[in-house]
Amino acid sequence: MVTFGDILELLKPLEASFLGPFIISLVCNSIPFVSLPYLLVIIGLAFKYVTLQDRILLILSSALGATLGKVLIYFIGKGFSKLLSQRSRKNLELFNKIAKKSLALAIFVFAALPLPDDVLYLPLGLTGFSLIIYFLSVFLGKLFLKSVAVFYGSLLTSLSEELGYQVIPVFVVISIVFSYYIISIDWSKIVEVHMEGGLKASVRCLMLELGLANKKIAKNLKNLFT
Image 1: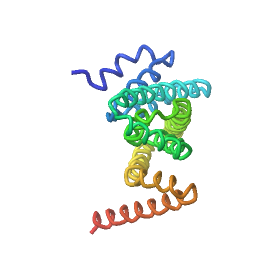
Image 2 (image 1 turned 180 degrees about the vertical axis):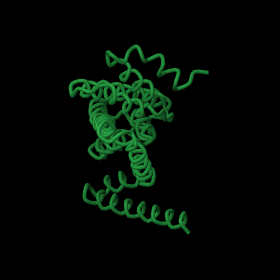
Image 3 (image 1 turned 45 degrees about the vertical axis):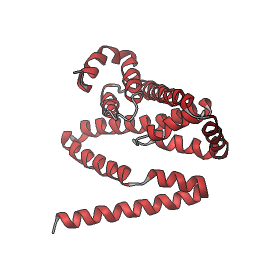
Image 4 (image 1 turned 90 degrees about the vertical axis):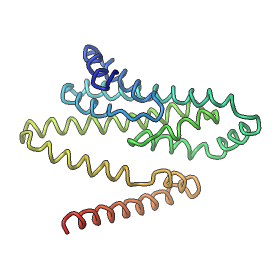
């Protein structure tokens, strides 16, 4: 059985040409509903690529690979659209026209955060959503996500060199807390609120979700120490 580690070993010779991060991002984003920890690879590669130019190329290559992977997901959904009845297809097309602007933002948000985005992207292929808008929204989202990952890896590299590797546990804790917030927030609810009430309503909803997440953290800490 081929493991994630085996895939990394196969891609090692390609790292120097940036084909490695491109291909691994492509593969890991083209498998529906399967979440592989490829972002850890991108963060790790930030240790290797130390110049600004190399890090920009790392961001671009991995973002493009991830976007093309999601384009494949789109076409998988589009393939299933042939199984729909004519009435269902017309209803989905009408939904597309009504929610086009809000969907573009939703696509960006799901691409920019480590969320299970295939739940959104497969139906978009079914509805025949604009491929150009889809591609641009996903690419901008993945560009943001990869920039954060590379910046995080670069920051960890520089701090490790200055302060020693004892800072790594601190970053691990920060990563766990950040991941907890990402998982705890009901992103589908925020997108739904945005589609109905606009940007201000979605920001208020996000603040409420953050407040609920803070209460959960406080409750868990209290239970831990009592």
